[in-house]
Image 1 (cartoon, rainbow, N blue to C red):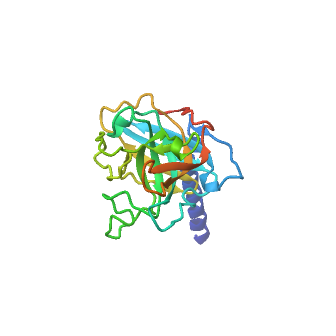
Image 2 (cartoon, rainbow, N blue to C red; image 1 turned 30 degrees about the vertical axis):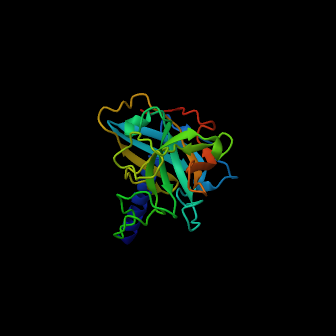
Image 3 (tube, one colour; image 1 turned 120 degrees about the vertical axis):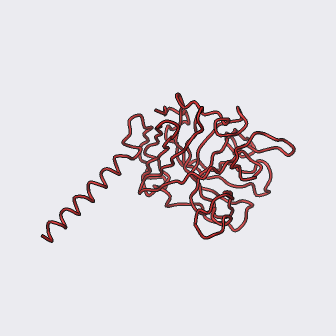
Length: 249
């Protein structure tokens, strides 16, 4: 009898593991597939990126070659020069679809961590009663990216908000002078996989959205002025060329 229960438990565990793995991005029809590269940090080496929808809910996920989330940014002890690590899904959505001024750049979803500062003032990710101390916990952002030569040749940055301007911004904009929103969607990590479920307002057209997958590092300007938040390293791009070949279905 004991052996029966042991074998049953092992079988159930194996079945559940197989079911969980089957839901990963690399097994989805239409996923953007990328070959493993042992020269890259495994947790940031993308094997697949995928997005699918159910009504106005979209699931963005990414399969890595290691344990997703295992290599977060390390603190430097100050906002100036503070690093961030992110799993990013660039999309063809207009920034207006989530509340930003329209036509202002590339709208991307990011699951990020940056231990030197907190930019989710409405949320307490570590549940310690303080909403201002958990930037080092993985959380999500909508960002609008634009080519920014000041960050380097061909580099992107989160779009700055010039002093004195008043662009449209989402209700959960955290107050930083950049096109960055903190919507509160919780990233879920499961072994090699990172998943974010996103809700869109009714009326947002999701019928022909294109997407890609990127792992990247960003850094706050050491002088804490524009350009404030530059992409400093791109670890991997699912498509290889940021061509957004994925089609939301």
